[in-house]
Image (cartoon, rainbow, N blue to C red; front, side, top):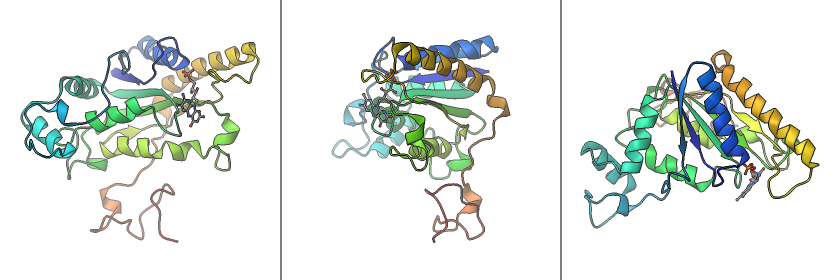
Length: 253
Ligand SMILES: Cc1cc2nc3c(=O)[nH]c(=O)nc-3n(C[C@H](O)[C@H](O)[C@H](O)COP(=O)(O)O)c2cc1C
């Protein structure tokens, strides 16, 4: 079994970079092979645009999906994207390690999704959701926050953390991944310190051990449920008898 760990953090000695390494070492100790895609240190360009397509289908108007499809069809994917897609293709498990930035991912990781989830290669109109390209592969998010856990519950002032991850989780479901429960490292104070340094140190060490446990326990975890093709009608709306798993996709009140 092979794992890809996608790391989005600008500092090589950061907590997040250490967590990516812990993830790799944990999986290797369990008999996996593992590689890290360290987006900053690879110089990954997160901005999709015309410059990545030197032989465009439409030189006078840039259509991201149009050019992605054309590049996929003509074996002309941008080299950085081709390399990442091939890493995804050889992975049985993908772990995303990143700090929460503005209630979301760092831009470099959002751009990685924009560019590497290539239209025509990893999804098409009919190859999505439970018919997605990456069916059979698992994905799990490991995210750190500066804010404490109490503020990330459903009534917390920073919003329900599970809901904040829904768009990312749903993107993974969209391309066929089985999405497993995330691992949260809350109160990872970095720059703005509230805790005694030894308390913070112990907290971070606890998260490292916790991530290792989380990864060792993946086989026993239930997937996060999402709707699939059978749940929607011709207009793409939930059928009345379909289950609703999230406020993001629910039956009308
Ligand atoms: C640009 C930026 C935006 C941030 N936004 C959030 C946020 O929305 N919620 C939060 O809890 N922490 C936020 N933080 C704090 C980081 O999540 C926190 O510093 C990080 O998880 C610590 O991990 P690190 O030491 O590996 O950087 C933000 C930090 C930065 C730099």
